[in-house]
Image (cartoon, rainbow over all chains, first blue to last red; front, side, top):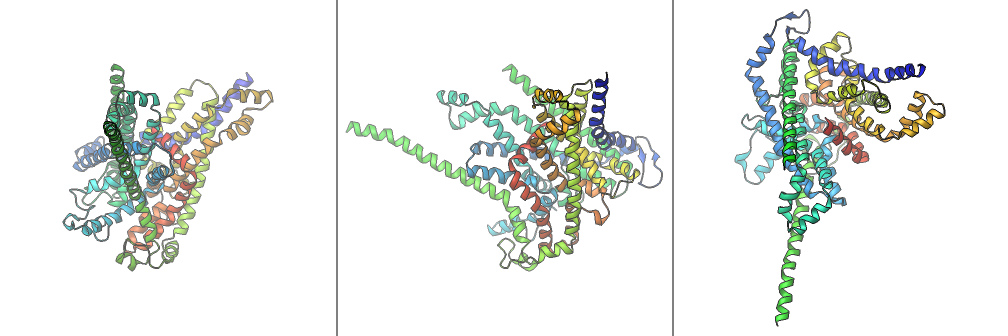
Length: 296
Length: 292
């Protein structure tokens, strides 16, 4: 009996501190923001209950939908940029020679750099006057292609997506290399006997073996792209004229720049809902792939 | 005659095959070298620019500095108050990293070495945290911390940093601790060790590899963290490096040498860390992200 009590005491002491801290800072805020979404509150004074007004305003605001669309552009850029680039590189980087290891470290390097620094450097790279992109274009005689990359609303969302791709290729590369190394070597031999080589082997043997990993990477891209904030905030702040607004910058600008904490809470709740929907969709995507795999 | 032709025919395709292979390899390595350059160049440019005067930066933005000047670094330290920001970042990062490793290890000990009714639920509950987008908690955390008077203190960063890193920390440490054989504890119980004795004298020292990985990942994340600092810290004497950089680059936006020098100061600690712990950083970040 005494030892049971001892175990219980031990468990309480080991689990409670983390549990309290985690609940207070990670879990409770979700419910807190859903609740505060029903209030008009400027941060000082009393909050007044206004029912669904904030939530309705969010849904009716075209800028919210533009932000959502921009987030989807980031998702698309990650899925169709990061994944193929990382996969292609992984196919070339399976060995562990000194050169190959160097290339791998170089590709992973941006992962340890502050996202603020990444945003600032790329802001300079895109700079209309001395930025390297415009300088290069001028140097090769394509002066007509130069433009203010971050200010031109017709392309700035894509310009903003490139540093994000650049920033996060590393982990996908490592995931793909690990998956490639897990393909049993008997399959390689079998493919050789069947006469499949090079490109044929890639299409018929290697890629099918990688499907599951590729799907995991796609799911990671989707959840990761919703977290995009820092680089965009530093490069454009969501502007000009809110053309590069993301859900997170929209939330920030509508809360801390204009002191509308109730409205910001409603937007926060919408961000949670959007990410839940995306997580469910990507889980379904994974499941279907699994079943198809079993069917074959 | 016949024989000679046959030999030639046999050799010819293998020759072209050899040449093809070499060409392919040269192309591949050339491409890889170019791609590495693309990844490293922005950082290299940042570093060389911080040793140039502003005039030289505008005249020759891409060449090596003709005259290496430490003037920018010194001014960044003084004018931009990078020294103060460095101290703040160090305090917050070290405190939060220690707290993360300690709480993570403690929680993982209970979740990996004991069986109890709520174990599965608690594990799920903690892992759930990896799915929650940090930005959606900014407004409520701001108001919550405002109410309890935590805003504009080091704790306004240390506590939420730790809370949001706990899921990954617990996940990584539980995975490691579960692999420690049960016999070790049984032997310790025979020797009369209590649970705390087992934790501090056996499990903790045995888990050092996992704890190191968690500490390195936490350190990097806290050192680079921006958005919590942006929202929870207003007092300029408490600003961390990324926050100072973002604000400073706005104010001195035309003094590029100075801004680049300030960035170089902020980036160097993480690059040193990467140089030493590359393998652990790669594996740890991938393990954490795959689960999340």
